[in-house]
Image 1 (cartoon, one colour):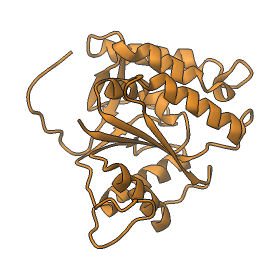
Image 2 (tube, rainbow, N blue to C red):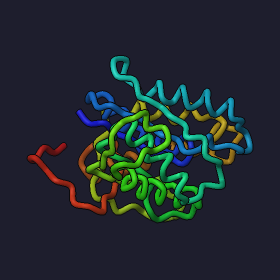
Image 3 (tube, rainbow, N blue to C red):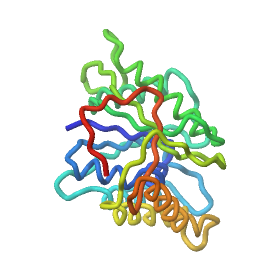
Length: 234
């Protein structure tokens, strides 16, 4: 089984875009960690305490009982993410700590400065994590490692239609995804500007599922070729 690290600039980015895949990977027995770079605050209807409770509920919704998902918050500043050495090394420390072999990060084209900076931080941290004779903050003494796969999920604020490299069939985990999404009521409750977002995300998942002959799907992109050990299609 793989150690999989999903990195999100803010709590809810991962759930809104690849929650079904996160639940699926955990059900398959992989060791799954979500790393939130910030606490996502301030927002109009949130507080750090509210967001922490929502994040816990969302994580529990995605976690199978026998393989709970690990969640880490790096504590960087929302709206001020900066692609700098300190941030890179902090992420590299987590990569080493969990010995990640697969990384999921936001798509590299976006209108949100935090997402763009977060992706650059993660891409460089993947390289930094393999550097020998150099400790990283928070690595807990774990050795250097270079994740073999870097996969991009579409948490983009650009009004684009994704052209994915592949689509994950999340039909079996759509209910867990829905529960994780609605956990974030401070961001998409009836009192917010995003009150219709949960239903729109459902429609989006149905569309991508239709592209692969499934009920629901989530799109992903890669820049490096994916090696296959065989053919097993949905």
